[in-house]
Length: 96
Image (tube, rainbow, N blue to C red; front, top):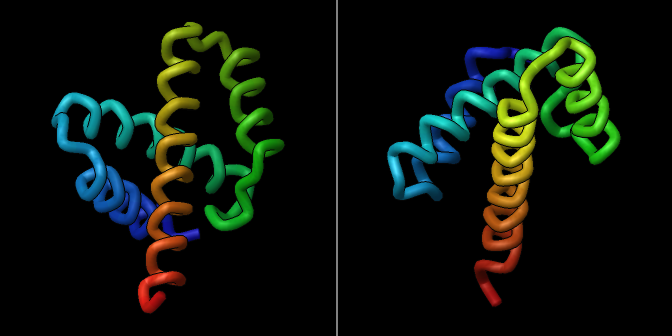
């Protein structure tokens, strides 16, 4: 995984979909933390499923992160993947 390219994709995605600067910053930060987790565990972004997200949440809990940090990061991760699905759907069905 090229972490720098992933971070650019994360920033681009949230800049495209989020109009609030505060939310952009919060979501980008949370998703970057998740990308670092993926990189550390040799997991590619396109391999992420619910089990990977749950493992991430469990690692955060066991590392002693506060609940608000965990919740915000999980929200960012889920937002990111919901945007990607919307974008993929639009590009696949563009000509209908």
